[in-house]
Image 1 (cartoon, rainbow, N blue to C red):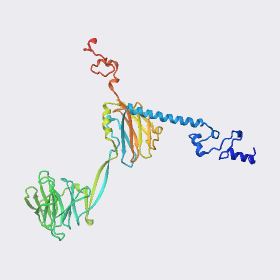
Image 2: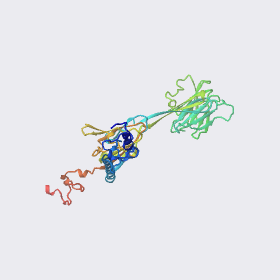
Image 3: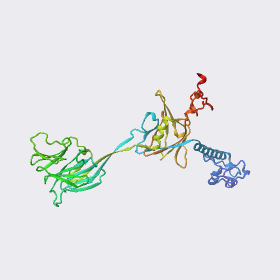
Image 4: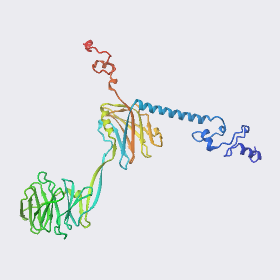
Amino acid sequence: MNDNSAKYRTDLKKWGTRSGVMHVAFPETKKKNCDPSTDAVFYATDEGVMEISDCGSSKRPLSRKRNLIKDQKQKEGFKKYQKHLHDEFDVMPITVKNHTTDIRNVCLWGGNSEKPITDPLFIENAEKIDVLVGTHPQQVVLNPANDLLYVANQLSDSVSVVARDGTVIATIPLTENAMPGTVSPVALAVNTNPGYFYGIVYVIGSVNNTMYHIGLNHKVVNANRTGKRPTEIRFDDETNELVIKNIVSKNTTRINAETQAQTETPWDIQDQFRLVDNDSTSKIAKVTTQLNLLTIFNVSKSPTVTINDEYHEEREDFKFSPGMLKHLKIVASGERRVNALQLLQKSIAGKEICKTLSLGNYQSAQSFQNVSEVFDVDGSMLDGQNSWCFKIGALQTITFILYYKKLEMYNLLPEKASLAYGVQMSKGVPKRVPKNPFKSIL
């Protein structure tokens, strides 16, 4: 037929498709033009292919009809399977959460090996806090009695009490004189003897030659005179004394923390004053005199991966009372899927067998969630020997929903177990047990 003829153009307009295709061999069929926007719903296959010959037919094409029937049967079958799982098996959710920005290896179960769920289980987090204190701070000490930091502020004649989180608990004035520098506190020491005035903080004023006692109530509770221009102080655990170095009078003042007895010794006697070699406070905090700042260094531990508390109880229980898995459902947050699950089985001889499941074959898009329905775990044991290993994405949460049954060990006993008198639930135990079940074999 001539494509340019008037009749062809008329027939094409009447009987042809929008793409210009016309069944010219049988024009008498007089099929209406197909409308892809509506007819594709009924006549197209799942791949989006539509047969023009099916357009206008009173019956839907077999390709589409079979797909619909198949999908419907699969959905109904899966619903029945899910109901069967919930009715016949125990259900246990296990939620694993990665708190780090790294992909981490995680291992579950295998309680006999005492292996942690991940390595390392904790990481250290360093934190630095700057706190504004008094004017011209000179020294900071940590009081073990209340875990607070004490800072000697030289030009504001005060002591700042600061918590480890940077909170200023108190500012203790050492004088009522409005003129700054009349006391000039420069050094501190803490009574670390649990028997006598434990936790009392001592601060020396280098201008007024005085040692102040600061109680745990953040108040000055006592004071002692020292030599001229004290600059250093320490607490001697062995003698329970405060040892003070005086640079103008060139002597050492020793004050008993309990009796307040005081002695002065000249510098020509050796080892009258020795500072503590390992000052633990320097690792915790330091002062910046020019900026009137106290810098606190905190180191905390945080878990890399956490798991719900019920898991640890079940893990211990499975060591002595094994279970058999029927089905596993995995729900993961985010777009990253759990690509593989390793099932590790360790024999008594120490031989390890690894079975890897590629979870890409079990993906099931349910309500646009990241879900995998794993069927190949049917028959897997939950005990102290078997373990699971997988990778969890950064900041990801994965929930494993286990459908399982606890094994009743008496059902595994052989028929000869009937001799085990008293094991009444064993299959081998007869309904009626004689008074002496061993009489027939004696």
